[in-house]
Image 1 (cartoon, rainbow, N blue to C red):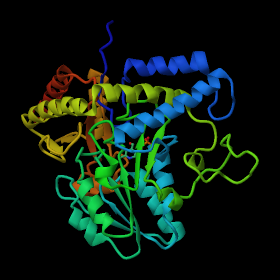
Image 2: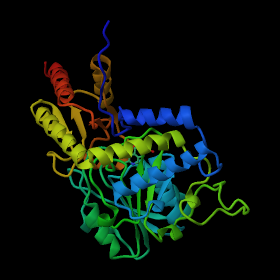
Image 3: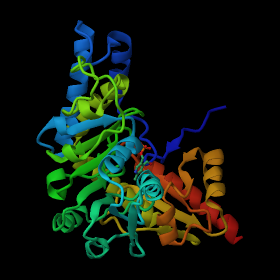
Image 4: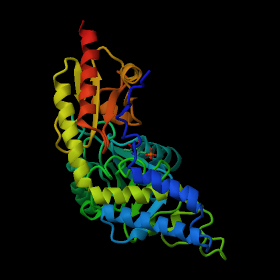
Length: 391
Ligand SMILES: Cc1ncc(COP(=O)(O)O)c(C=O)c1O
């Protein structure tokens, strides 16, 4: 029996496949190097140091950061968002976020609300999932310490006006955090244009690296306001039992995920060579085709932006007569079409879209290697599934 080829449309969860060079880089590190970084002086250990610094340099280049030392590494998007949020917010502060944000932002804030009297305001969005800078301004208070905004929604693909929101935040003393988990590597972005203090992203989604890395950009000087969450050995200032106060050691105790960072060096170089602009254009072509096909199918509702403007490759739908999980299971079991159903760790986003009671949506997220033929195959299968209900 010939097995059907999988059509992987879950890149918003984690990118797959990775570029070939990523597999080679991980394999090379694992087989040929295997050393720790920042600790020992032999050849392979020094090469490990270079891997970490190369990863820092390429991430800095991709986000427009002038100093690579302002990029710190963590374990995933959630880890670096926790560092940004819990590191900067103090008891009794006020924080502004949006209903579009992910649980990796909402849950640390909820915990701070319960444990440290932090007040949180949730900026609403319009029917397509866009937040307005004026509403962010209206939510701010004199004691607002942090404004945390998702750049691109992991549910609708809507890209928020983060540069304009940055200008609003700059009118105050608040710090500005952008969750770029669904945008970095998907759309060109620049930390200077956004005027952000903190920008967090995983290394395994748009950056196309292996699972197990996260990156946090910290604007020069803002590190004085961000307490570390983890303490331990850095291989530096080992005569003291106090954590070094310098970047990046302040936030990077313990051994790094070297296989992950070796892969990230290769994947970020791939993005620099291919260009994020070209990847975004490819996604836009796929989304245009997908939306046009979906519009022709009776019973399909597209949630979020209805055109290719201001959006990523994430497309969320519901189909009349189907529970989202059932639909995703049919697509996987009969056709090896792989997507994600449910609430996507974004409870307030689904409340805003009115999709909570129905069990959320089915989310498709194309990647750099997704083809137009794959999108056509998904449209054809959805047509058959929707027709089955009409009958
Ligand atoms: C918008 C957003 N923020 C944060 C995260 C958390 O990233 P990670 O899974 O690497 O912890 C995700 C992952 O789904 C996300 O989509």
